[in-house]
Amino acid sequence: MPIPGPARIEPLPDDQLPEWVTENKDIPRVNVVKTLARHESLIKPWNRFAANVIGDRSTLSGREREIAILRTGWNHQSDYEFGQHRIIGMRQGLSEQEVEDIARGPDHGNWPERERLIMVAADELFKNSEISDETWADLTEFYDDKQMIDIIFAVGQYTLVCFALKSIRVQLDEGVGGLPEV
Image (cartoon, rainbow, N blue to C red; front, top):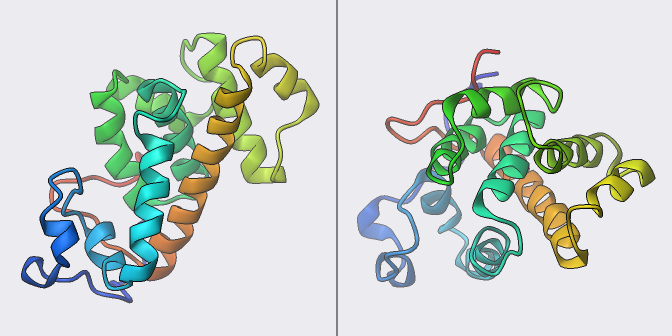
């Protein structure tokens, strides 16, 4: 579903971004950052947390994280989230076909079982707020305790982001597509 209207909170213009954003080359100047920068006491700790979930401190590979994030974006029908992470996911080794297969679900495409199970876990967390005993047992054949926590927190972090993006109606950045038509 396309973003249903104009932004409810406008992103800050580049010349009004806080210094800690403009001085950090690792923080992208995308609409979500420029919008949340209006609430500096929230965005600073959130940004540190998000960096833990998506950055080098995660025990999941970049590819595995992006599978979880893209499936979460799809489940929440978030054009912005899916569009941004389509780009990031492809940088992490996902093909265009795999990105579209993520939208179609865990039983579409030719996934290694460990990656398919990440999508199953994301779907279960979306539907039930927990991973079933069966899926948990299957996942633990591939992932250790830290990785299991990272799967849950990747889905949870990007669920929160989807809530914000859709409620605020953060608009797509220039050149970024939304949800695929699958």
